[in-house]
Image (tube, rainbow, N blue to C red; front, side):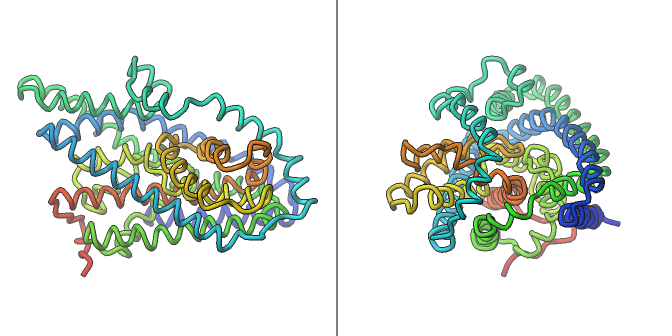
Length: 429
């Protein structure tokens, strides 16, 4: 049985048992599902353990393998422009849908009071975390690590990416005698990390069951019902971005069949959905992009780790919808000028989003503070959506990794590669 089939069975089983526990108020079943969630979280830790050595090794090897130092700048420039462009499109889709679907979709005072009472403390803690976070200038300045080892230990992805690309670029200009031993070492690290991922992925179906079952069992039906319009808007926006933006990019830029492409990457989407982490999914993303889609290692090892950090289309779209929803409930309509500000803020803020569960909530605070009047408590706004954030986080992470793989195919084609995966994916007509 294929990995995808096993994961799908585990996903369905976890959802069904979680719904049974929640709807029938079976405390013993809910407690059991929550208890085994520890296995799923341990699995995330296990796969996350491999991310840093894999990213560093693959980026260094990939950058050094480009050979021509100008090629590094060219590919990097293309990747940044593509990622920022699709992120801006995602935000616009979210705002358009919000203006259509969320208008006058406020909650009752009773529901609003209940949500504030339940989530205000956590919402305020998220606000405090956001206020302590560095601004855009500090984020850009912090890309250069004073201590690369410390950056790796703290899982600071942007400094790690900068150091790895810089190191790989400098390695590419060395003579073969000095370059080859270092490349062989990092190729060995990359190979060992790949084997570790293959072993860890054998546990993926069990981890998916443990993670999904716990999340569904803990959901409250009342809150879920009150936020149905909001959640539906986010999910519809993610689907439209997938169907319109990514399909167009695949067909016209990568010249691939979008349906075939999505069928080949579905296992990655499911793992991303279950873990809510682009970083945790990254090893499988790289392997699938190379083996199933047919993108070369030099492109995938450069574009995909970069995408796991700066390509947050789903997160940016969600921030747009969440801001519009919170504004509708707390203050009413937002002006076009304010909505334009949301496009800029959400696009730039998504660059520094960590590829870990619920990171988007922290960045949402930045967007909210720019969109809501000064007298409106941002914590109250966050309190409105915390009840369903986890399930939406899972959905937007799935879109994020799909965008990463789409970008790799587009960049590879722009570099003149013939994308020929095993099984001969037919190009789009």
